[in-house]
Amino acid sequence: MSVIVGVHGIGKYRYYRGAGNSVTGAAAAMRGKWDRYLHRGLGGGRPHAGERYIAEVAYYAHLLGERKDDSPRAVQAMDAGTQEVFAAWAAQLDAVGEGLTGALHRVTGWLLDRLDAGAADFAGFFCPEVAAYMAAGGETRAGCRSAVAEVIRRNRPKVVIAHSLGSVVTYETLWAHPDLEVELLVTLGSPLGMRDVIFERLVPAPVGGRGGRPPGVRRWVNIADKDDIAAIPPNLRGCFTGVDQEVLVDLDWIDFHTAEKYLGCEALIPHLTPYLDRQ
Image (tube, one colour):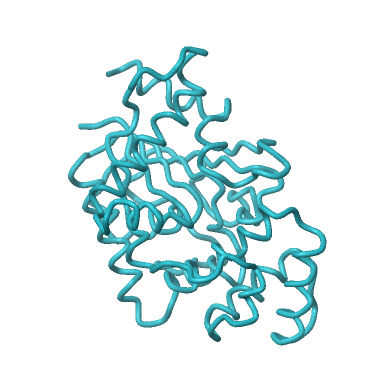
């Protein structure tokens, strides 16, 4: 049994391309980075000397495709499904109250004018990949879940750390495969509770307005930056039963959603240390 499996978030297609269209190569490159990021918090101030914390990163970005335009202005050229996701996400920033066309125009300008470049760039990543994953028909969605399930089943980890969209894929994967048992699920910057974008469209669907901890998960910890515009709401207990602990952190006013910041944050240390000490 391995200790930790990671499930990545948005914007990771470049690892696949950089590895010559190799899923194995992309996953290995990401694992190396996750090990370094975790060492910043777990290494006690020592330089990283190749310490391994992550058994494997479950890689699925190649199934969602590569974004074609790095500019947030590309929102205006999105397909209808992606526009729908963008409008629903943007509405939760209390920036819009009109129809789809007006919302796209107004919120795109609002993001460009008022948010820092990192946040505006993030919007370009976030919506196309979420739209692709949540799309009706579900072949891509099922493929992503299968990829994550395969990695968890192969490694049998004690801990699964799921970042960003990866928390959605992991949540649905663990529900779809109740035989997969995990001692600790850690969700980082999770959009699981995002109304109209993700929450109501989860599989299985929430019952009575509430989702729940997957049956094979013994303990669930959620960590979110207070300003993370992907983690809306940052606290998941309001819409999910079985969240054992929530930690609201202040990572960086610009760099508020990256795996680097979340994996290196102090809030993660006490939850992982007991498992690493048992190795």
